[in-house]
Each structure stands twice: as C-alpha cells, then as structure tokens.
Image (cartoon, rainbow, N blue to C red; front, side, top):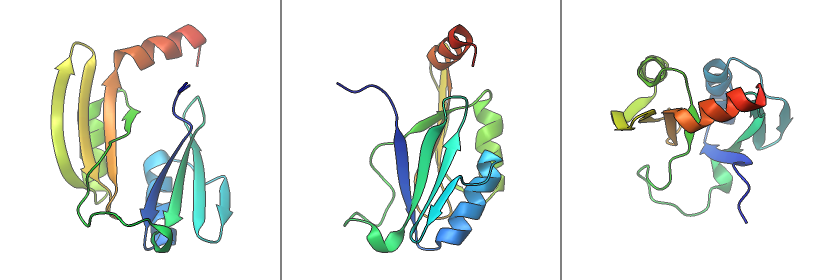
Length: 131
C-alpha cells in the first residue's frame, strides 16, 4: 500500500527565510514556488520537500513533536553539527540504533523536526541502483 516517501511538508511563518535556510542546508535552490509554498527536489531520488506558509498549518501543539522523517546522510555527527551551526536546535543527540543505523534530530529555526540518519539499507539500495 505505501510505496515510499513522496513529499515531506513543513511549515514556516517566514516562508522566504525558511526557503533560504533549506537552500543552504540542501545546497540547491527550490525548483517550484507559488504564493504560500516552496518546494525542493532532493537527492538522487528527487524526494520532494515542501515548505508551507504557517498561516495554513492545521491546529497543532506549540512544541515540536510527532513523527520524524530521517534524511540519509553519510556522517550523522557531521550533519548534526552542521545543522546546529546553521541555527537549528538540538532535539535528539546522535544515537546508535543498531549496526549501520545511527540517528540524530534537530528543530529547524521554524519549529519543525528534522532527522538525519546513517542507514545501511539506504546505502545498499543506492549502490544497487547506481544512484
């Protein structure tokens, strides 16, 4: 039924600042913009990452919480430190979850959770597909 990650959306009261911050994090510019929405295509699988104006946010708790989408990185510690240096706040420290699986997460400057992960399965799939 579920075929994989298609689009992750986050919210930001300052859409332009969020687009600029994520452009710096991803190292690319958004490929799509319209009033109230900005979208990036990220990585070899061109996963979609959208930022929605916070005016359209459904009712949600004030504190970060809920599911965390983890982005594959080659070095969790380095990625976590880089996100903190760019103004994110620590949420979960670097944690070894098992052999080949390491995670950490932050709260971006706009109040959204962002996870990073070394994932042996992702690496093996990328190698198998030549991506």
